[in-house]
Image (cartoon, rainbow, N blue to C red; front, side, top):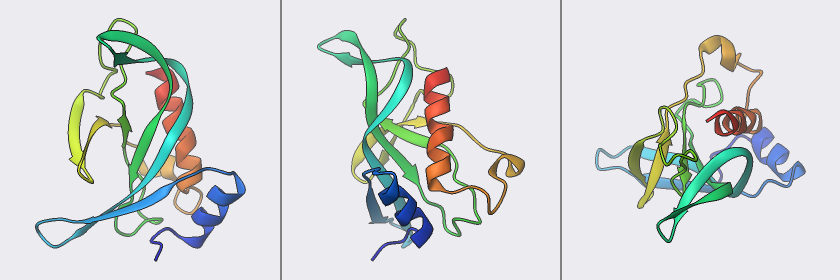
Length: 139
């Protein structure tokens, strides 16, 4: 059973955006939910490490956690794999932390929208993907 609102599922399908809903039970009994976007394409000057060399990267696996109370509760931050770096080998600002989610290590991108930016009722998962693309482009 899907935990995403029907409007999100319909919009993702209409735009042809592949995704997988993920759930895991935490030790405290709560359930963590996330949406995985495999092969998420983006523009920008980011790199990944392959064979000890930095190589230009234009797509990644993207994970967005879905908080309890979404869509009235705003989406906040995101996670990528592989780890993305700048051309000089440095991590982008506020993207140098690793977090294990769904049995996988992810690069955490600390990006927080204000309540005004979220504009309750005017934002959804698909429009949040534009926020993510913009953050990756500017990194």
